Length: 133
Image 1 (cartoon, rainbow, N blue to C red):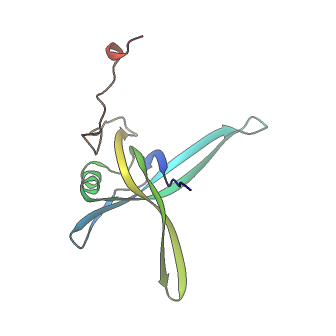
Image 2: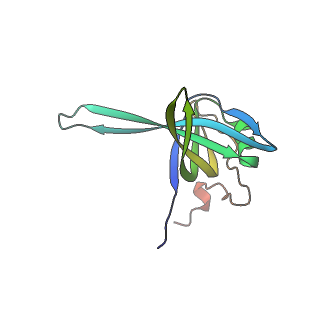
């Protein structure tokens, strides 16, 4: 039987990323918020924000640490995992998305960041002249 573990998120960073070295490997950790908006039965606007823990390793992590900041808008694609640790006899759990691909979309203030962490996979920018219809 086949299986698939993939998360795709677009959101904004809640704070600046934290860059660490784990042995000889770089890891960048940050969290992003995704917000769902809707109107309830009474017509009132509702909003729910979910926070997602993100880890980017290696070169992608270096790019995240260099270019992302609080408020940056980002697309993240990766695998869902769970970290477990014990502190003071209490077991703790944290769900983490491990990045396979990351695309910087800009920031809340409209300043665009570099486009993609994987230049070999990056698509050229699309403008009105390149659309055939």
